[in-house]
Image (cartoon, rainbow, N blue to C red; front, side, top):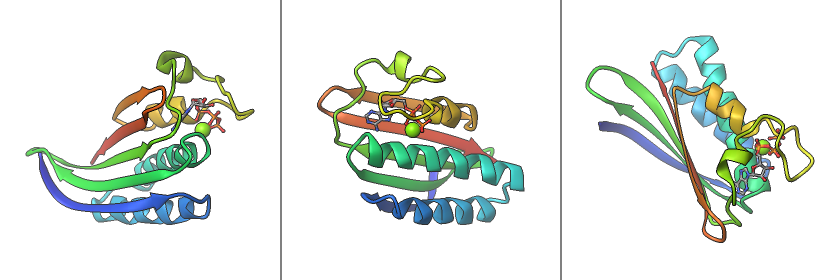
Amino acid sequence: MVLLSADTLALERSEQIVSVRQAVRERAIELGFSLVDQTKIVTAASELARNTIQHGGGGAVLIETVNDGARRGLKLTFEDHGPGIPDIALAMKDGYTTAGGLGLGLSGAKRLSNEFAIESAPGRGTRVVIMRWK
Ligand SMILES: Nc1ncnc2c1ncn2[C@@H]1O[C@H](COP(=O)(O)OP(=O)(O)OP(=O)(O)O)[C@@H](O)[C@H]1O
Ligand SMILES: [Mg+2]
C-alpha cells in the first residue's frame, strides 16, 4: 500500500468535527468519489469523530490517501486514550448506547465503509480504522 497523503486533525472539541468533515470531503473529491460515496465517508467520519470526543475524551484523526496498486482509497484512523470499550461486540450493536444516544454511530460507520476495524481495551483507549475505496 502506497501512501499518497496524510493529515492529522485534533479532536478535542465538538467544533472540530466540522473541520474533519471538510477535510474528508476535500480528500474524497480529490479521489474522484461520487457524491454518494463522499457523503458516506463524511457521515462515517462525523460519527467516529463525535465518539472520539464524547466517549473517548478527545484524540485525533489521521486522514490518509492510499493506493493499493489497483485502486485509490481514503483511510481514516480515529484514536483516543479514553476509557476504552469493555465489550466491542455489544458496542457495535444497533441501538446500544451508554450515553443516551441512538447507538447507531459505530454500526452506521461500519455500514458506510468498505473496511472497518476497531481495537479497544479498558483503560487504554480506542482506535477505529475505516477505508473507502474509489
Ligand atoms: N471512542 C470511544 N471510547 C469509549 N467508548 C466508545 C467510543 N466509541 C463508542 N463507544 C461506546 O460505544 C457505544 C456505542 O457507540 P455509538 O456511536 O454506536 O452510539 P452512541 O455514541 O452512544 O450514540 P449515537 O448514535 O448518537 O452515536 C457508546 O455509547 C460508548 O459506550
Ligand atoms: Mg456515537
